[in-house]
Length: 432
Image (cartoon, rainbow, N blue to C red; front, top):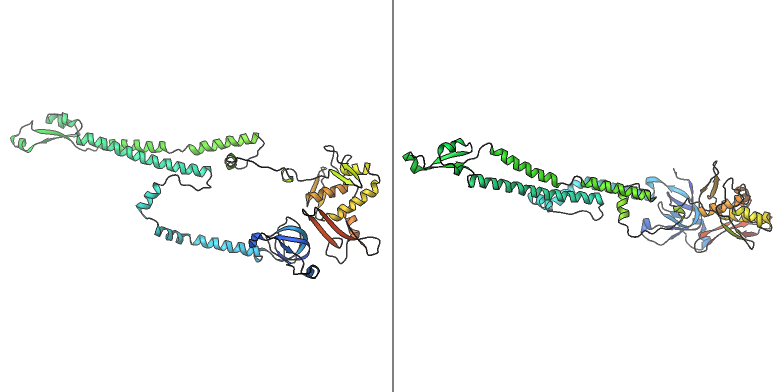
């Protein structure tokens, strides 16, 4: 990890890992929109370079900002929680923890204005089809299953009430089979019927003056229980417990089909996302390949040299069909031209761009892919050690790795340049 006092090299695309101050920089511009919200790029430079530029220079770099242009070095002044970005993250974490502790109080405040008791429960029960706008398929299925369950509960309750009402009307309002029994003996023989005598005929002791009526008996509880079981059966059948399983199986089949199309799917929800896509825009760049470029064509000293595609075999940077071998084989003065080209490439490329050769014969790039492709070309031209070319141009009192001034590559200029002191004395300078 970084500590205060470290020197960090900065290049285009880097994100400042800590707060610091610029000690050396060339055309440095930072994007501080993540911190300030302003999209305008901020120029940075060393404080002592203000006299050279003729104006004020902002030397301070804030952690989390992006390098949009130029290169340079910064001295680390604050890291971790003491940096600006660390303080912001700590403040956000404190607010989240504070909100978590106040959730109970906030819920009470919300409940005070919302309906309570039966009204709130009834309103929630009668709400159907409510889900988040960005909910995924499984969340929507959960809402659908809940809605179907509510409908099943209502239907089962209605079926239970209708069955009980129909049975009660037939058995107690109409009397069931009891009114068909004319004699007291036949009525008493039925356990659910009871014989009732009228007052006038009771005094006379007449047997034919009474009626047979239906009364509630313990066995009637079994009929009510059967109606309840029927209602519960309807509720259980209405709940679609197999729907999530069916959707999961459908997504699994979609994953297999996408795999057959050479689309590797890691998350099952990706199938739903791809199914919702109407247009797919793709750009074949280095991010879709190995991000290892190779110099294919060169125009040097009035001649054009082309790399033979598909016939290069890697191994120590020297092959028979790469661009370097083509130049050395066909150039009028191959040794002088190769030496000049190697010197120009190595002085222009950043020292952080390096090419390594693995034991299995493959190459590994570190740094800018374009510069690594050019550095690889120098190996193909016969250069064994890039430092042996750069060391003679190192300035003992300079802030740069070599040379006296650097103009980094930019899309506007479409070039990069270094100004180095000319060898052989005389105090002259030349541009590489």
